[in-house]
Image (cartoon, rainbow, N blue to C red; front, side, top):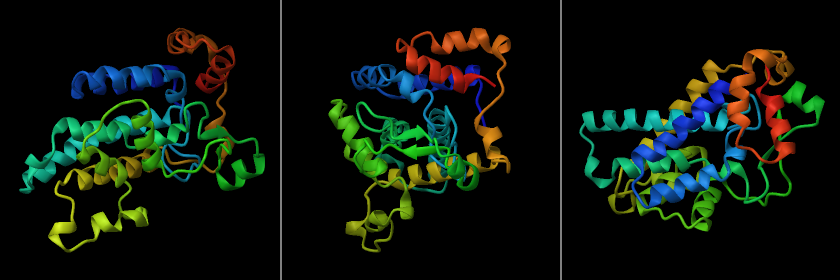
Amino acid sequence: MNLTAEQIQENWEIFLGNIETYVSSPRKEDLSNFYTERAERFMIMPAAANINYHNCFPGGYVEHVNRVVSAAIEVREMWAKFGADMDTFTLEELVFSAINHDLGKVGDSTNDLYVPSDNDWRKKNLGELYSYNKEVGFMTIPDRSLFLLQEAGIKYSLNEMLAIRAHDGLYDDANKAYFMSRIPESRPKSVITFILHQADFLAAEVEKHIHAPTRDISKNFTAAPKVRAQAKAKTKALGGIKNDGLKGVMSNFFDE
């Protein structure tokens, strides 16, 4: 799967628009600056390293986050319809958590977590189009997401911390304390945690269906060039990138 330059640019504008629409000042400006200063990294990030998972392609991360935001808003309405207590969290808290739930996938302040694999055998036989960068120290994705926000001085509420921390649900054993307790006193006081998990699960499963890989993995990842057809959109998408090396890499990703 390859997104066009137009799609990548449009997804990025939607991403920043969600911050503008749902996050209040002054945190809105801080969060927007955090992402725009790193736009050249976020715009082409995949959401996963392996094609058997969701959105393993350049631009897949932002597309996934946008889908989780939309899903979270819809799932929120469903919970309200069935009588859940919706006064324990705000819409801003939910959308903020959705926007930042997978932030840790970017890596650290200087190194990308996912780097294009140079192992042809693993790409062809295992679907590993990306490798994990050994320069990035190990942390779980939720923990790194929270650390990066803290490092940037972006404040978050208790609800937001719990939603981001536990958004993987029972796929992470560490979340059993939040999802499996039968004692009211030890359960989350807000349903935001469950809503974000369901939204993330829904988005990821939909993406696995709409971006289902073909057997020829290499053709999904490396597209043939259509320079003239996409020249204008590519220029727009790459115009703000100052690093020539990164601009070259992104240019190759955008070509179909």
